[in-house]
Image (cartoon, rainbow, N blue to C red; front, side, top):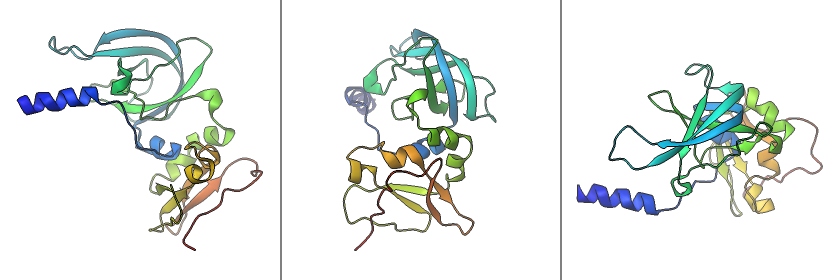
Amino acid sequence: MLLLLTHRIQELVEACSCAPAHPQQLICDSALVIRAKISSEKVVPASDDPLDTHKMIRYEIKQIKMFKGFEKLKDVQYVYTPFDSSLCGVKLEANNKKQYLLTGQILNDGKVLIHLCNYIEPWDDLSLSQKKSLNQRYQMGCGCKITTCYMVPCSITAPNECLWTDWLIERKLYGHQAKHYACIKRSDGTCSWYRGGPPPEKEFIDISEP
């Protein structure tokens, strides 16, 4: 019991940390992907247990479009996130004009949980290619593996792998490749980057063994 309690306290003290992931990977790993406006927010208890002092923020949303999650939910009215940002809670603006792309998990009781490790972006910050990829392209590549390349040399180790080089080239995660490319599985089972929309001004470089 003491060990469990100590572990729980340690969990609470640690700040939220998320492994870097390409937007496609985050969308593939999510049970729900929707475009929505935030109508209001309310702080609510995290559970019915009176001994549980944790709080959640319940965002009331207006769903505009669902891209993933149809088989479990038809219309989402609320999404929940931890109140504390150190527990990966997400702060969203509740006004009628701002729209978000929200990805998250569906709990056993049907509640939708979102947190900082999900892909959550203002809709207007997404590129045209990202918006198009949400309909089908990203999910066509869910059988592919996207590997983050931090330093040279780095190379693919399997035919179903795409190298993500934004950090190496631009020193930021959500760079040109994240905003304009999807890793798609071909008919022969191999995966490669596919770009939607107009051609880029300059292609990213494909880093491999010399």
